Length: 523
Image (cartoon, rainbow, N blue to C red):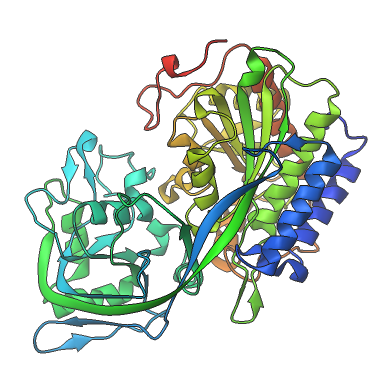
């Protein structure tokens, strides 16, 4: 086993990792929700760790803290959604069959409008696909399917594109002039069960405060369970399975259902001054020190809901613990790398990547001179693997760096074993990728040493079904951090090579976020 430079033993490293995870996921940190006592304790703890490790303050304007202005929005759970066809009506149960909210900063919003089934809610000219062509959805309530159309030769043939993400669908519905959009949930295409929807989109939610007025939002956003969507479509005299089949056919166009939806949402608001934390190691080369690589991990989770602490041990106390140890390893090198290295812990990732989005809009170092982002979100807590999963494999030349580092350790790099879930779009590196920064996001391998074939993938699916975004994401006695240490060792090697070598990673032609080499500073 390789050992990260500067550590005397992997045992000492494992003990520090576990202690950090235990601390951040302990009841005293109250689930690390933005705007809570747990947030203050988390930020104070991380700032003290940055000082202890020896990182220089890296936030714009000085200090370790980058203020992130948020607004907390709490919808009234007594809201009532109804669908009407003139004779009959349906009233889904909030939390059980639908969730809804508004990101408009208005105490009350009301919608009473016709319902349009808009297929997958996608307009993608590069795939010759437009669910909205020739159909006016202005002022309508859209019902859309999550994911990409399963059409051979279109999109990525099973690997989710950004068009399949719920965030895109809400953005597109607003741009098309709709007043509301309900996304039909399916566990297989969403990538998580309904319990995650209920836990993540009820109670207080957050948005960036003071956003651009041009950033148009729907009056009402929400999810509806597939079982309830079947009832809604049946009210319109149709079958959801038939509509799903039609929506996966090239040439499909949005279809009015002949029914109306009514909903009234009351909300409470509060301003929250949250923060990202940024530490820095200045590069040693006079010219190249102006270029940076960024290691990043989100510190937030879901706080306390219904009296239960959402501890977030794996997601993402483990990633923050890993980032701190990588920072320690770079400091312990003694001599800085030619390029500078930033260590960024972000707020409100669980609220739609808000902290990283704010950083991308207000970076500590210009994004044009940010040569790579390396993200940590959920470390391996189950032991060593022969492989490592590279999310977004094939998008950039950073793949080569990861594969070389893996070969030196006699490990294999594999692509996402569940590409239909779109993990590349679901963590903080995506905010920088959208701005053109090549991103590296590793997840635990699935071929565990000493475990039977298929165990790793089964455990991955069990975690999503039973622990992901639930109070049960806690430290377990059977954890084995040897695999996390090997992954950190690999990420340290990759980061050090990026910080040292002459060339920089580039997006491959055709990648969604490709920026031409001319946008890069010269070596």
